[in-house]
Amino acid sequence: MSFDIEKPLSKVEYLYDNASMRRARPTRPSSDYDRAYLDNNPLKASRDPCRSTPLQRNGNASSSDLKELFSRFDIESKVIPWDIIARTRELCAKYLSGSWNKVTPQRFRLKAITGGMSNLLFLVEMPDDIEPVSTEPRSALLRIHCNVDLEHLLNESVVFTLLSERALGPKLLGVFPGGRFEQYIPSRPLLCHELSLPSISRRIGCLLARVHALDVPIMKEPMIVEVAEGWLAKLRKVESKVAHKMRLNTVQVDLSKCPGEITCELLSDELDLLRECLENSNSPLVFCHNDLQEGNILLHNKYKIDSEGNLDVKEGEEPLVLIDFEYANYNYRGFDFSNHICERILDYSDNKPPYYSIKQHQFPDENDQSVLFNAYLDELEQMTNNGSEDRRPPYFVCELPKRREEAVEQLLTETRRFIAVSHLFWSVWSFMQAEESPIEFDYVSYGLDRLALYYEHKSDLLEYLQ
Image 1 (cartoon, rainbow, N blue to C red):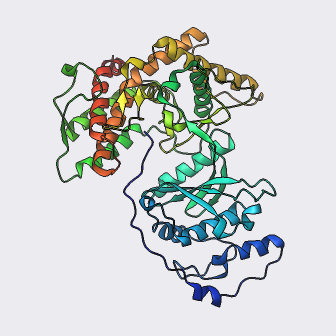
Image 2 (cartoon, helix red, strand yellow):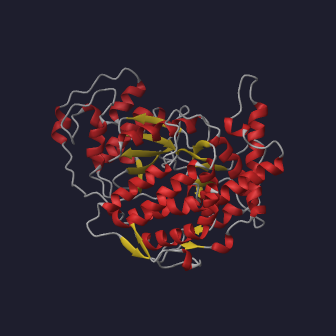
Image 3 (cartoon, helix red, strand yellow):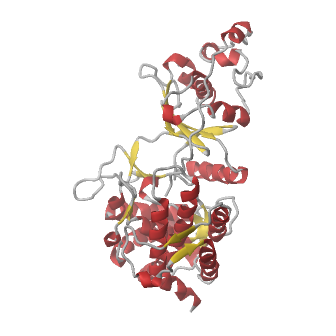
């Protein structure tokens, strides 16, 4: 699951400081663009109305400045304060440049997408009657980092930049202290049932191969158990003891395989067992997306899925783009496969409680999964053959059998054994979200359903200990 919108921030009324605007002495413009820049960025010729500290001509405000300013935004009010509009306009002029210098704050288009304690996301757009003069985009997404762990932010920024350069994600348009500009892609997220369409499954297989082949300059150790243990540590700090009676909500499994009550101690024991299984899995460590569900795969608006489930795509075109690499890191390859396969039965489009459904009848059989894996192997083969003589193929390619049938069978087995891993991982996440998130979603029911499926598939995972 990808959404992480936490409780809205309090709205603070802002009074525009016209007096300080009149007293300021502007910098002499050296060109038409500089003149337009100063004319349309009044805050540049003044003192920062939020911090009362001078802003330099280079436009470099600190991340704490932006954090304080944007903390005044309340997404529920749907009203964006004027100082946020002016500062955003200023950032566009400086980092997107070109015709953005010509847009006055009064004509500046700014739309809030999401808001919370971690990130704020806005869509910025030029007026229709202003044309770009160079390569500057007509629209972009502005992401403001709020309360984010610095280590996580560093890793996420490195990942986003690399994916942008490799055309595996939205383009990076600008970086500044406290946030960045990202490419806005006119698109829609895939629907749950579309993940299993052969035309879509093949595309996803190709994209996964490209992601797994990346050499990303971050820590190359699996952290899946440590991450889950971190969530569990938060649960242990909850004043009221976290314990849930096992019940089934949208799944059908053999309850005799499940414990009667779910506690932190029980989850901790399961994570210890999981660690032992993973260490014996021999699943190669690769760079993984780790959350490849339908909402994180966009279909460009220019492409349509017809009634037969086909895509009309020309050679060399890529209709899909992966987004939201929040959980991306080095992980066992089997997790990325199994997690995506699990997502093919998890539908988050329900608008009534519990706001999700688990459609077990849609679980892909081996023939359906083989479509994904054959496309994955085709892409790896093409990447290896098209490389230069001194370019070595990704190391994990070498451990796959040479015969295609055997390679597909190995991936099928690896995925089957990791199905339980995905269910346990996201069940712990869901129990933690139930204590912290204000989102209208039945996290407890979701966590119990995922945990029930973990026990249903646990015997496959235990094969690693035999």
